[in-house]
Image (cartoon, rainbow, N blue to C red; front, top):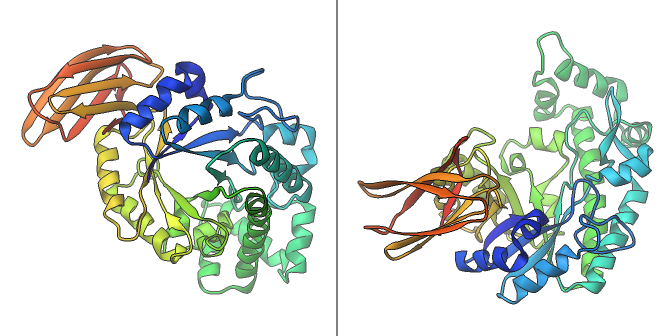
Length: 399
């Protein structure tokens, strides 16, 4: 698989035919298309949720363009993030330890929201021939969230001493010396309440994910994929287990495909870390779910870091490809013999670019407006590319 995440904004700005033709030319096999976003709006027309763009079926536009080019399209759902639902049901917001309910993130344990999302997903699958469903935000966002009265009752019912668990939280996040590892260290050495807390959160995530997976299995033969936080792939999973409740080993029984978000530059890491995440994902998926590594192809990444990350991820035994986050956030660079075609999918002009092969380097000005395309002759076939706007270097994908 050579995949790419895509916001409907790309289709609105440049048109589905142009965007998906670029994807075809790049060799993209799978597009993970944002179908229910953080705002709670949808890219398809449904009576159950407000549209992203009034009167436009952005999913149908993308789906038709993708299938016309032999590209698989996965409907991407930001599952537990839904500002519209939170506005209508403020009591359903994921509750912070001290600040109260979130206005953006719904509680992963809220049964009414799970039923609502099941209905939205079923409506989609009955009317659109998507190739896959991609679940994102199937997790807690931080250990300090998930502390409503209902959450506390659930924790207590699982045998957790709330007073001790809350003391661990306070020592970890509210001590005089700032954040510490207190609760994570307690978990590592088998503290009963820290372990039970992680288990209770993982149980809630699994119930939520299972309810959505059940809809996919009943309504279609679509591939079920999940975007996962990269820390879950580490051998030391204390951070991921407590913060996110997102256990790779458990979710592998539900999903066909894992996409760990190995965004190296966001973590200030290099290609070796990307490979570590890819390898850990393969290990924890244990052959039950395939592993496709999500790569950093947005602000902060460059043509060099993306190429390095891709080589590292693809070299890991047992992986099934890579996926770029995201279309519209990097410059496409198509190499064809002695020609290079640049496609500026950004919303700012590209002013220059540089290509290299071995010791040979060529740098040129570009003057490439947003949405623009330019083909230039080169004296060699490049193996790396860099690109710049007036604000600095941007990410570029050489294909």
